[in-house]
Figure (cartoon, rainbow, N blue to C red):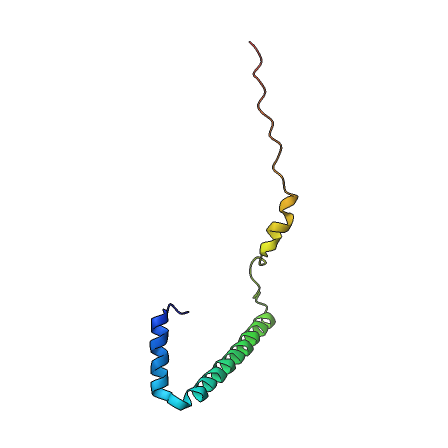
Length: 93
């Protein structure tokens, strides 16, 4: 998680308890609500930008469609290699 080890997480938790004490649940709740609101706003802005780009005639889709991993697995049984024919012996001289 963000490159933090267990010791760093414990230190951050201890500092949070020392700073906020009994208000820690309220602080955590308000931080969670702020993050949720930020995500909602980001989704709205992203959707609005996609719509405006579409209206302006710019293509916002990726250049090639995204591939699914199971596409390779589904057709794997029907794909075969071409038949190998050994070279013919050269004619006798």
